[in-house]
Length: 183
Ligand code: SF4
Ligand code: SF4
Image 1 (cartoon, rainbow, N blue to C red):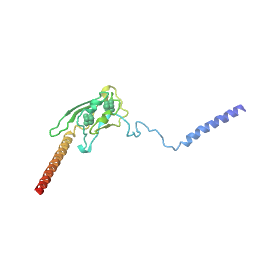
Image 2: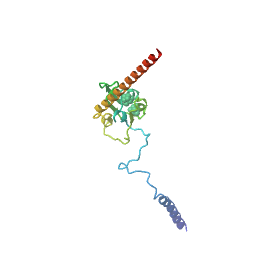
Image 3: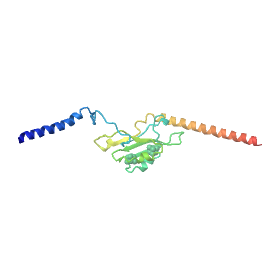
Image 4: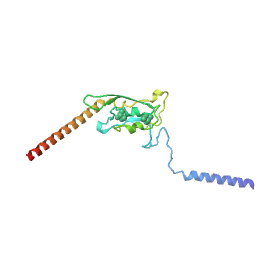
């Protein structure tokens, strides 16, 4: 009798656990087949930093080599040198290196950037054999288009200068008319 009771208990327990399996047969899987598939990353996730393309600079980054990110970085993992292109008041970076092996993803560099041209990459599974594999050249994607970006910035400067000049002229003319009326 005891044996039948044990078998009945075992069968009941098996059916109970199988019922869970059957209930979830049509539920879509919560996991993906990594690395062939990748789950979407939250917009808030932090990864290695990158220079963001800006429309106003013709799709290039808008780093002005102010070095604020380099100075505030607690891990000393940013290294920048700048140059001043002819006809521009602001500098542009000629070297922008990141030692991602040291980065703590604190986000301070993004917070201080005056042109909001820093963001995060979507890299979350970078692996390497040496520290050198984590040295990133953030200008690598921008070198070819640098001359074009500088020309776009020059054009913006020329337009702003022309607008300022036109406004100054209009103000002077309005003042002269006012003075002539008063006489
Ligand atoms: S996220 Fe923090 S540690 Fe990483 S580069 Fe920026 S300031 Fe440095
Ligand atoms: S803070 Fe922004 S603008 Fe200044 S050097 Fe860093 S990335 Fe460039």
